Image (tube, rainbow, N blue to C red; front, side, top):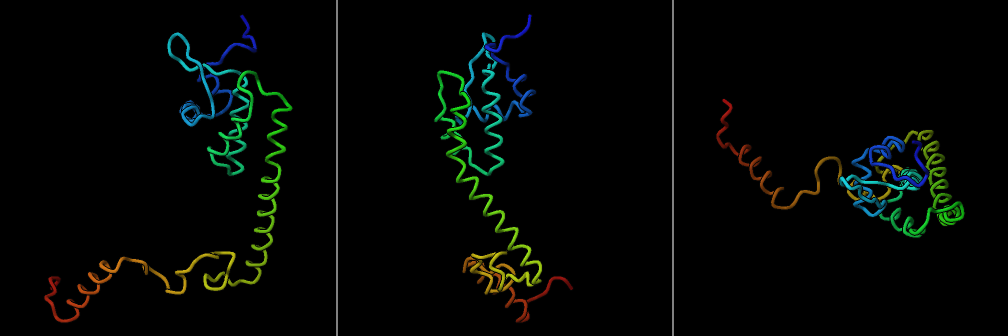
Length: 170
């Protein structure tokens, strides 16, 4: 007997059709991104419309959005019915400025990298593109931000060795 479009899908079928592991589907459910029903045997059952939600989640993750932001956005979709094209268009319109800003930031980065690679500086001290917030760069390479007590201990041990303390390697 062929399945109806209203028939729910078992978690394994959703995983197979979406390309998302069952463990990830369970995680999405724990995070409030998906909802499932339970079969009489306790298996998770998903609506076919959840395949579209899963695709949306994956696209949003690829855009770099947090699961919390995705959850809040999905919360705007109707729960009592399958979201339609107008519902998805509303979300798309709301995200357009964010997507445009990311495109612009990536374009700027690409252009700056062309200039940076072309100038050849690649210097942590001079290149604001490479590491713009590095306040510790002026102190030099290596571990410079150790707690005072740790620095003192290593200096004391080094001083003792240099002052003629017995060397056990002889």
